[in-house]
Image: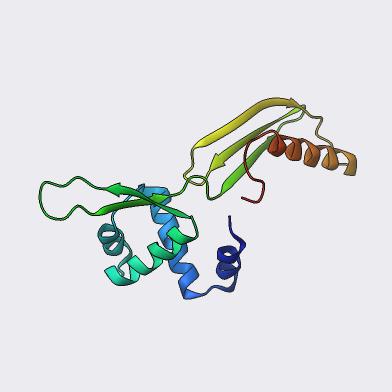
Length: 146
């Protein structure tokens, strides 16, 4: 994920909060048109269009093409770019760990189960855990900057 949006969110700017609301909407509701998104977020269509265009330029959102309608102009459908960011989850057991990689849309990309690891409250065990996670990341075809 680009650092600019994260830094913007940390400062709590209004623009960053609106972008976060847009991302949250797409995570929970899937793709939608600008008009539907504007109604859902109680924003004007021009304001929503501005944010969608910015987020498309930053590759957080994709234009998925025209939505087929029975009449009138066909609106564009927008949604999250699944490759714009990733999340790693680690489930630590007493003698093993499970690691999963999820894309920005919430789809499981990769999972490894029952990786041998002895859970202990020591610096060495922590370093081993970090090494296992780093090796998992290196074993994926994902850009580690995302």
